[in-house]
Image (cartoon, rainbow, N blue to C red; front, side, top):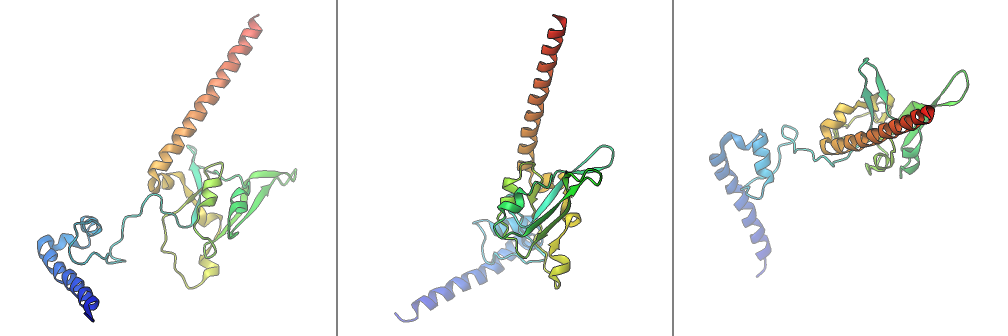
Length: 212
């Protein structure tokens, strides 16, 4: 029958149309502008409209979601911040679109390189959000951010991020990546424990040698 597919499509539309009104009466105001309502419209049990009213509503961001990278720094007890990046350049080398530029700090007296970046730039318009920089970083100093609302009218001022804009505390990393952060902290704790055990064993051997 000609036009059967069109009629079936219209019936699906009408089903969702009337189902929306029924669900609105049944759920009331909880269906919109609430976390409960967003979760319900994401479920398989939803009836009627299931779209999210963005920007008033937002879907929860999965932990493994990745957008642009950011640099992690640790907040010390004395109030200073210590950036984890050593400007080794691995992230820039593995970056497929080559959107990362790093300038290493040098000691003004000796002229030798210092393991700390003096300049760090990422062009987010070129970045393909692959996450290679975060995967290959040996110091856990670069992570993928969840922030994606970065539209602007001037890319040179807002879309080329420098060291100041890229730097975020480790607490922020723990907030958006709780599972990954806990895993990294456990690995770091085990390494510190093994390092301390080797130090104590070396000290014991040295004391034993001196006593003999």
